[in-house]
Image 1: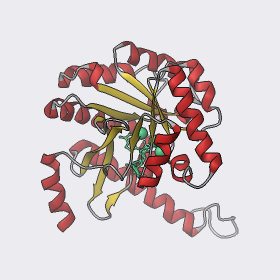
Image 2 (image 1 turned 180 degrees about the vertical axis):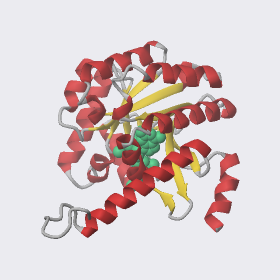
Image 3 (image 1 turned 30 degrees about the vertical axis):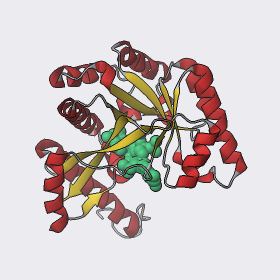
Length: 275
Ligand code: C2E
Ligand code: CA
Ligand code: CA
Ligand code: CA
């Protein structure tokens, strides 16, 4: 505004609103990371395709914003990543997930997502370690999920971090497999314990033979490497039948269960949803 008339507007009013909104979201997120008020961890089951038994639960962060209501992690995780808040957010999820797993004590592993920004700084392994120690969870009961894009930037530093985590006895999964630029090369540089096939392939696998072929190729690869292959985003019986036929060993999706809070949070959330 101080530039006065005659100066070209760098930001359109529309962009200005969006930037404002982003800054507001960042400020609120900073607050909520202090108070933890309105921040929750939901859990979605991952199921063995043959036995139907739950092998793991994926921890998914949820935020109930005082004015806007529920905001999707697809919106606020990037804000956290770009504002330096992701380490704090990640630690909240990690610690809560470990605590909840100890409390449930049912032998089902818990899987926690790690953002690209948390990787390659040499700090994440000790963060994982401290969450394990604080909760008393056995490392074998924890999984860390990283997306392919997480490995693009700081490649060797990121791999070093993952190696340290895996050396503790924590399992490491490659998330959203097939959506990155060099999916296969990631399998060469790190011994992942699990490959999660992106839901977009699963959805199309029923009526597009190209996508079915990708699912089968990944399932075959998993077998060859002795690695679990999870089909993500399974919503229908037809999709389940198809991914089983193509050889996936585990599934995750609304067909089997939606992300849900622990019992203690469920009551709080019912109240939030009323107001
Ligand atoms: P993701 O890691 O690929 O997680 C799976 C997403 O798919 C979740 O969305 C889940 O609710 C959704 N989903 C599961 N089954 C189905 C299905 O059958 N159909 C459809 N349409 N969707 C399904 P959500 O919880 O909204 O999370 C979105 C993304 O946000 C996650 O993708 C992950 O990348 C990120 N995210 C969530 N929680 C965390 C976290 O604690 N830390 C980090 N760094 N990222 C997180
Ligand atoms: Ca994930
Ligand atoms: Ca995924
Ligand atoms: Ca995803």
